[in-house]
Image (cartoon, rainbow over all chains, first blue to last red):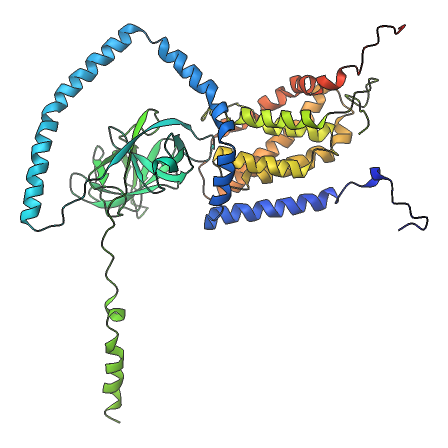
Length: 307
Length: 176
């Protein structure tokens, strides 16, 4: 401090040196990156910030909304007429299936009751509109217009009229983020419809999927339909997922490279159905050794006796 | 804060920049960044552009703290991993404010050439951060947004400096 009691003039006060400041912020950012990637514990920060930014986000969505509205308004009448006719024909085509399905479901219920099986609980769905694709270029995600307010929970499956689209991975008060099946981090347990071969289908990015770790001589063919196996307790069994488009069998590798393309309109926008949570699967039985607490004691007794 | 010049070679003395105007431009940039364009290539990162601009022109007011906060906001708005944009923006702000004394000696086109490697470096930082975590490569076209942002350096300078060019009070009695 100066003798005369003067403080240094204010234009010398500039806070910490730029390098120190940068190091500080870079360390915080890297810690945040690691925490978010590894432990996913920053979701509450994200939820709070996203809620605060919701009006801003809504305003930003307005131009896109307006442009699509104008586009819809300008759709020609003939397009609508052919669309209508097509839809009516499809309705008629599927009507007999629907009528029979009701009958089959009743019959199925009766048969299940006869077999004394646990009746499969019907899963409810919520129709949601896909608002837009998330801007993050490193992942494949879309945002739907239903959120915590509509009791959407993270982990629910999302389907459209053709098959599975993806899974809800993040929920905000009024919107939710759906990870598409083509996202690199997204995996779904499937089975080949033709022969019931089970596997896990993983996203490969760029609108494609890949069936990993199947032996080079596995019984799969191009054109096979993959449906959910339901082993994960999230997706209902039997939902169509993908079609095998190409198989590279190279004997120098242990596994075949199996390329698939999604059946549902994964990269398209429109309406989707968010399926409710499945009833939980029965807990996996514990290992036999730890299940019987009396045994180790007995064993010790047996060993002691010969002494 | 004392008035500054548009470039160091200019004879014009500008009015001091208003804090509310700086904050408002950042908010508008954030809003523009939230418009969901999906995977359309070549959409500039408005926040990065505005941040780099203010870091070059007002390095004592806009710096790494602002960059960090804006980065957090962008991470949430984009649905990307927390820390991705903060890290990239902090490094951008460090480079921009560190080089501000040098950059302002050049005419606008050469200023833009100085800013281009900063934007590309920022995108590279984001790419490395995400690819290390196993994300998918967004394609080479993704880097196009840096080039469009640099092309916008010219109009951005005029728009963002416009309020400082205005005279304080017009004196009709003034002889010259």
